[in-house]
Image (cartoon, rainbow, N blue to C red; front, side, top):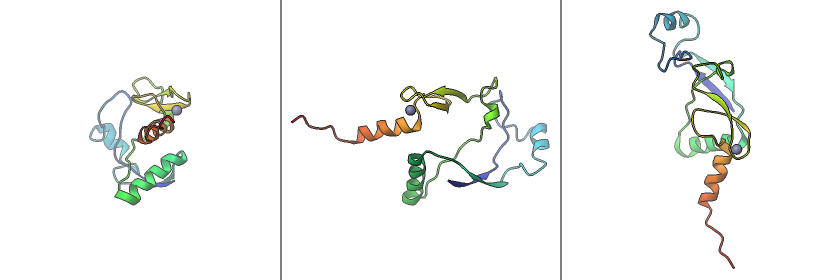
Length: 120
Ligand SMILES: [Zn+2]
């Protein structure tokens, strides 16, 4: 999916809040990486996730907003995102909380919406 990546903030591993208004944040924002700078990007979503995003936009004008965490930060001490595995399909996922991947979550939600079959 083609997306525009809009620079919003500077964060630092181990610090829960923005460092944008610190001396380091000011220094880091001196170049192209400051609030509002936009980059074209392609994000590879599973098809059902891409459909969900398209449907939300077409039906409601709504779109998700993500936090940008470079893969090199995953697993670094203090990073709040870590690798884990889906409890159902064992696929690797990255998560703050909850340990079921988006595909399995969708499957569960679809099952909940389907009325139970009657026993003949
Ligand atoms: Zn799964």
